[in-house]
Image 1 (cartoon, rainbow, N blue to C red):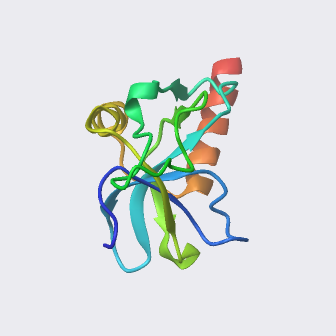
Image 2: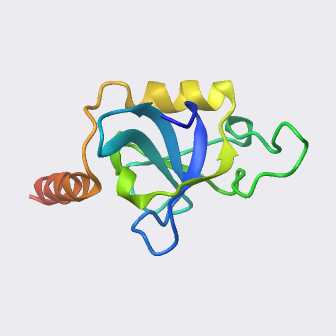
Length: 129
């Protein structure tokens, strides 16, 4: 893969990749494993992140486009579609940010977003009953 663990990416304009994606690992010819960052704290499964989880600048000292801003981790390892290329790097997690993401999602098998939504809505309905 052309990215490093902890790189924060945006997919091509017009793709379904509207939230920042953190690259974790390669998967196959169609997907890579990543997690999603959002600023939507209203979902119970979203985990607050800390400013120390994010690099502020690249190696040349230029500020990253995506830095900490009320950021939350969606608690799911997701299969992100390579068809959303080209990806552009817009940020990077610190080593403690990578460790945080891995600790919060390490037991999960990667799934596509639609399956995650189906699973979370099923769990919500079960909690209501």
